[in-house]
Image (cartoon, rainbow, N blue to C red; front, side):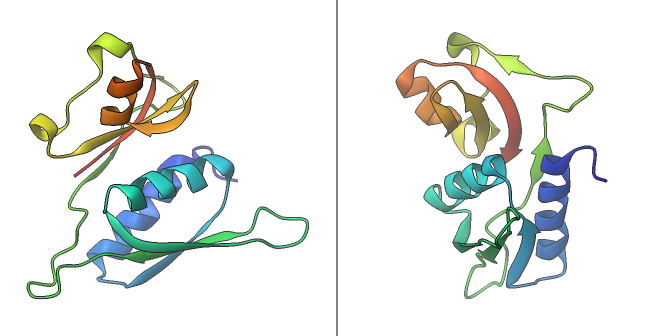
Length: 133
């Protein structure tokens, strides 16, 4: 049993990027689906597909994004911030800026899973899940 499924999700992405894989498959959950949606909207992954199995959550197939010329990945760093042993929350007026605005922080808010820029626009705070750049 995995004690931290979000950390497992991020580690699978990190490992697939380091191995230069084009597609990575991860077990699905609603939070992972929302994190994947935010990564796609912000341009860090090329595409994704939810495969639902009857009676199970299913899987998420993620097509990773690479630079066509240099073959460098779009995601260079994934860092889990809020852990099960120590949750990290941020208020609307003190949301984190990743790489001075070049990266994103993914937050779980009362308005759903948002990037730090969207949370600033909606003036909501929440749990800081991870940093991506």
